[in-house]
Length: 186
Image (cartoon, rainbow, N blue to C red; front, side, top):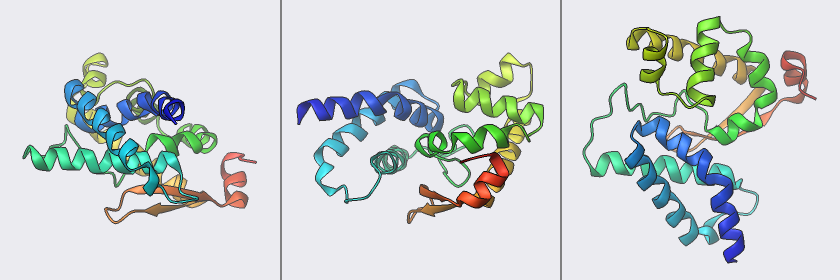
């Protein structure tokens, strides 16, 4: 049992750190929240339903823990913290959709492609990206928002997404015929 818990921790720690860091934009809060996510997961592993994806379950715990943290500490959610999930896919789902993401990202404008690549895959914050590229932060946020909206629209054409009660994406199902035609998925 202990080795499986260690394996779970080693497999999901880095992806959860990136996910939480993006939502909180604070290294110390990120570490605390991820630690709390694993404590909650280890304590309630028996509530994981048969057929439910482990990754989706962990990301749901992480999203709830982030929201609880902000509520408990009465932190206003600003554009910099952006804890809403209505336009952001959890990394676990993004990884499973990698075949489509690569094709769809190529259809974005160069700046939109670059900002998504830098923020979601190269782990820069929007502020760091703006500074690195000598751009206004609000301009970068605008490019990021437009890119995420365009990418979401493309993904929704070939996949059906399942949301939880907070409208957070927790799972998806590919339409193989459409997906193959749009992005070459087989």
